[in-house]
Image 1 (spheres, rainbow, N blue to C red):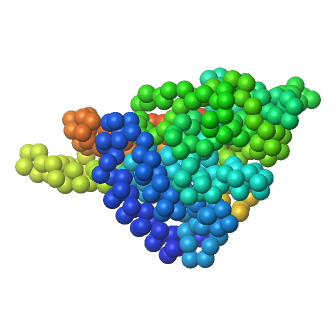
Image 2 (image 1 turned 120 degrees about the horizontal axis):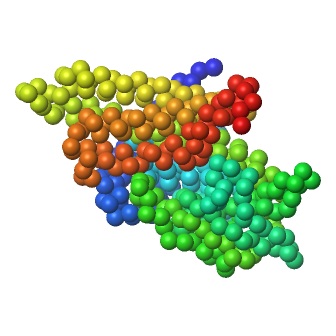
Image 3 (image 1 turned 90 degrees about the vertical axis):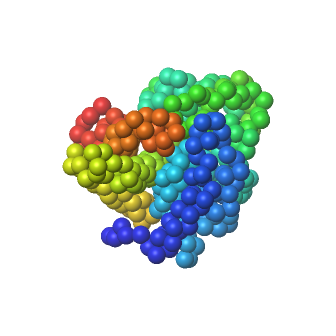
Length: 394
């Protein structure tokens, strides 16, 4: 099986890179400093078709179309190229598609798809995915948010945290995992419910003051007797746990692609700076101690990219889920940990200049750490990989 990119994918990469360098790169520092979420750029990303890469044509997407990059690999390419100039906009795209669009596309009824997908695919609106809670992160089975069926409605009470794209002025909905009962074995029955923005009792709390991803929209959410129709159940009742596990498998590869963009940025900045900055009369890149560290960046980049696009190719080829899950965990673990290391190396290359906010290196340094946490921590990835090897790890 070949994992080489098609000519369509390569042309698509070039077009996204041109867009990112023209529309995002010149403003990324200001957005970061002002904690500004640029809705106008989100809409331009929609005009470019970036939100519709995994959605079929009937909903406004390009998946499956001849001579297009409309597939999961195309989405990863877009995330990488956007993330190469701004990780905040990269995660905005990743979450909008992987956590916003794909659950509805994969598990939604035809009515739900027709209601929500056209605007989401066009980038006119965004959707969030409410999974994490104060006491339920990696242990999603500890979810405490409840949804009770009462007189043809779901009544939802609880809270969520760290939810991306959940509180912007163009957010149209959040899909929320909630306890809808108890199974025969005593464990919680989890289901997923669509809650439109503006529903009474759905409270978007003030945005977080985060270490990084300053231009990304992230909020805690509270639900006080939120009532939505029973038809807002996403997929089958009691299948919420399986749904979000599959959603996170895709998301892990997409986060790996975001990490690849980060590593590429660190390599580009380091090579350029090492060739320009001189000490003792010569470029600092002539010093082995520094040049070898930059060489390590190239190794990490090539390995991370290969792992990421192999996993994406497995997804597009419809290979067995077990094979894809293992590849996704491996790509996510290696690429994200490499990205964190890459930002540390790049900061060292820049020296004192890397420690001041006027340098983009500082922004990438702050942005990188969460890559090891979001959509499954490094510890969870190691657990999944070990289980894939047949080890009875808990």
